[in-house]
Image (cartoon, rainbow, N blue to C red; front, side):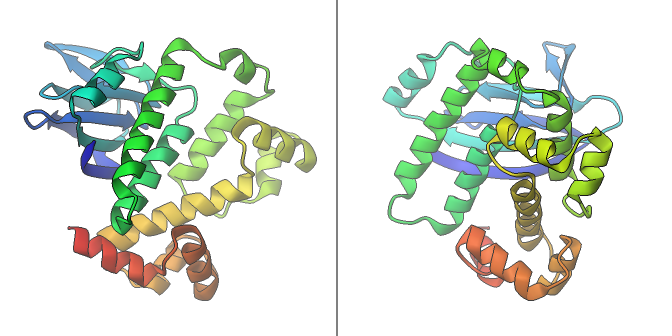
Length: 262
């Protein structure tokens, strides 16, 4: 499977995407969106994904006043890979609502990180990641684990909180404030958060900041120190240490690799 393009955190007023001949497209919408379906606008809620097989195109607009926020993958499949995709139950070119888009988002971000390194197992990693993405989409389509999610108290409130953490990584998130907003103890908060998402709230806060930092490194000329401050770090050295721990390279090395890919 050939990955042509991965774009994260795209923000536009409207979007028109036409796949190149033979290429397929996957779009993960973070915000509500209106799909132009043969001249008829169909409103799609946020946390939705749509897959267009090769040669198909789609036209989208923002829904309401919020700008369009999405991740995007363009890829090309051979015959056996197309057969694998078609073996799933989820429909092509139709939006599929995700109860939680974090797993799909993590897979896409992992692919983006690998695209900067292109190690020995690059092609295998990308193909396996796309297969996992298709599995996640199919599970969402058939409603897998829906009952399990419903059993988690305050799940929708935690989901909204987690979305806010990733949408606003610059915020000085504190557990005490979040517990106060949800009117629960720290122990109960931590237990439910981990039960809902399999990670701690602190891990999500750190990840949201580092993802934002990676985006700034790739798309701005801000210094490492300015990016560190923008992402809520009081210490440049602590920021650089965390960035290298999570990305396998320093911020400067990450920026150099990203520039060489453009």
